[in-house]
Amino acid sequence: MVTRPGRAEHVVDAPLTPPSSSQGLLEVFRRRYLLRLLVARELNARYAASFLGFLWSYINPLSQLFIYWFVLGKIVGMEDRVPGDFAVHVFCGLVVVHFFTETFAAGTRSIVRNKSLVQKMALPREMFPVASMLVSLFHVGPQLLILTVVCLFSGWVPDPVGLLALLLALAIAMVLGTALAILFSAANVFFRDFASAVGILTNFVRFGAPMIYPFTLVEERFGGFAPYYLLNPIADAVLLVQRAFWVGATPDPDATAAEHLPDHLFLYGLGGLAASLVVLAVAQAVFSRFENKVPERL
Amino acid sequence: MSYPDNTSIVVDGVSKEFTLRYQRTLKQVTVALAKGRDISDTFKAVDDVSFTVEQGESIGLMGLNGSGKSTLLKLINGIMRPDSGQVLTRGRIAGLIATGAGFHPQLTGRENVFLNAAILGMSEAETKRKFDAIVDFADIGRFLETPVGNYSSGMFARLGFAVAIHVDADVFLADEVLAVGDRPFKKKCLERMAEIRDSGVTLFYVSHAAASVRKMCDRVLVLEKGRLAFDGDVGEGIRYLKYEDADPGNEPDEVDSLGDEELGADI
Ligand SMILES: Nc1ncnc2c1ncn2[C@@H]1O[C@H](COP(=O)(O)OP(=O)(O)OP(=O)(O)O)[C@@H](O)[C@H]1O
Ligand SMILES: [Mg+2]
Image (cartoon, rainbow over all chains, first blue to last red; front, side, top):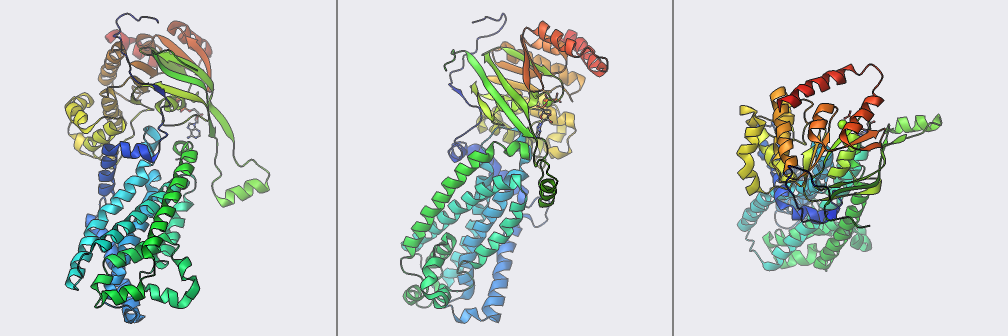
């Protein structure tokens, strides 16, 4: 070893490793402090320079609720097909669907939006889609609060199975939303078309879940094909939230559950969660494969 | 392959390929296909570069514009991954790549300091402890509370450098940190980098100014169109470059290095 005069000896007690992180999501959860800062940043930035600011995240879902309630409930007359309050039925779905679509849409744009950081700093890039998911999750809390209060007025009593259903539903939306956000955030770097495609996909999600119509209608129209409809994890998640809130808020919960919820709902839910985890693993693998080219293509 | 315990950086047969132009739209791709042109055109910005660096060495990385210096630093920093070969580093890396840090334009200077420090691996407590020193070093006054999008490029670099230099790093990368700073700041930066070097941190310094490289470094690497053209003694390396630059038309460089000659005398 060469000794350099006037230099202190600096012993580094660490192994030689590749400088770019390669552990993906694991690394994201190891660096929670950084994740928290990014989430805080996102929360500030999402409605930056708007007067109503934070309120927009309530105005958006509530205006959708109003449109669905009025057009489909009152004009189309869907409320006659749904026991209890049609607005509660819709809102149960909206909580999950809005969470999922926000995660998907914001997550897809997240890497491009943070390009100043991506190009100049070494950090796991999965951070950005995950942060988008957590920001969307942040807005779910108050919506659930509103839902709880409304349901309490309709004679709903909390039950442990309902709570489980809610948690399972949120887990599905979280995992699937994150998976798609990761996948599309990388794709969006190469072709900005993906951000536009997401707008279309989220529309399919919105109408492909039993939110503005009851599941009975699907069974009625599709008959034997209804189980295939339930292969959509978001449809399961919506039904699970309806199990958690809406069913208990109808005049006769047992009859509602028997008539309007599919058999083996929890089984479908767990299956949906498992499928979402598989999608997440695939998304991570694809992301790691293409991440190499992300900073130079921005 | 195994390396001695005091190896700080290993760059082994590393190449990085870039696409020269991207034909992104459907129209462009169809036109290119119809005319029988290539859809993409690639070149190697870093081409089969190998070297190892010991802990505590101070390396000057030199070369003409576009020779791949910043790209090599990004590979060592972990911002990019090599297409072939491998890069290995030991310990924490901090530094500044190509004038200015990864700041978020909408956030204020203060928020960016915290975010940047966290990305460089500092904890919240550590950042709070060093915050005053960072702000003191950057010396940007009350602009600390305004969004960095409104900063001048010098202020941007100052704040980025201030954060990077307060990380307890084992490897420090500095790419053109002095390019936009004013004279007093340049002097402060060079002094600070000398301190860092003397504390035994591995220093990787990119500069076009021969004088400051002579002052700071004990080994020079010269890149030429992505290939490692020279690796060795500082004086020889600079002479090698001068030989390369023998043609007239490089006067701005001379002026710059003269400025630094003085600057070197200052310190
Ligand atoms: N994202 C990118 N896509 C395509 N080409 C790139 C990209 N980034 C850099 N290049 C090209 O790679 C080559 C090396 O660039 P680099 O920034 O490493 O040069 P440099 O040695 O730092 O030059 P300078 O002295 O001007 O800072 C240049 O020809 C540049 O155009
Ligand atoms: Mg450069």
